[in-house]
Length: 412
View 1 (cartoon, one colour):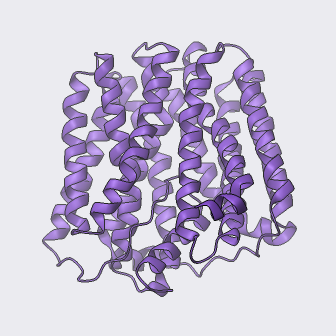
View 2 (view 1 turned 90 degrees about the vertical axis):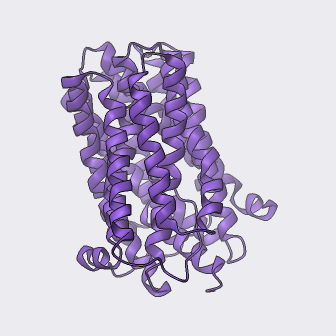
């Protein structure tokens, strides 16, 4: 662990600052949107644009890097993010915000690809798992800490947008001054979605539905808070609770998944998540219940992403794992694009309680489909190892996680 920090501290510090800015962005926009009179359906359009941009950016990052190199892509996209954060406050308009969110999502996809390429290059076979874990922790700590920055200034003013821009600008300093030359980024020949579905129907369906859950939670949580008329401090604590839950439960669930039938774990985890969320939604008028629900939902949704990837790997040859990662990322992105739109329309029509009803329904659908798949074929005799990865990962991080899983299984 010390060796990883010695070689990658600048990158991890930069990622921490980067996620401070990005974590602040999503929550702040939801609150500022309510101040400006935007309803939930309007904000869902704004929030969804980020995931559209991210999906497009993840596909375009490779040609950009091949054409001008890692450093130039990193600096150019970082400048775009920093500028967009300032423009949010300068041009308060739903269509301008939607366009800016698309640009930010597109740029973050490329920035993640470059940062994760450097991380992969800095790690050896022996330290790759530790590097991935530290990278994920830096991301989560950055997002959690961002929620408390939100309480330090008026969300109706310019200050927090300036802070976001400064944080993103500063994040590139330690990275660009210390990172070595990254290797040429080469993607594996993709596996067709039809082939991937035939190999793991639950992996594909689960990833798609989870994309909707993830984008609904992390894109619309602050909008839910404004619809519930929570204070800025209460919304910040609620969003932070979601990420804390994901951080706390990631490793226990990973440990369990390496020791039991993953399909049963997916089914049990989502079934519990559905029951807790649907029942808790009825009691959401109590703030303590809202906090507990945020913690529980984050604790289910974040580890579930890594769990479904590990389950899909159980049916793949080691040589096909990297190819499958691109398909899973694309399927997750499709679900993420739709998530905020559905939840925004539901909240507008049925009220803020629809937030938890939507999440609980998707959890229930995953559990039911896992139960159905359990009747169609037996669990695999040999399983791959679980490697943590966040839903906002780029193809590089997914392939890095696949390499970690192979090495832990003795494939290196």
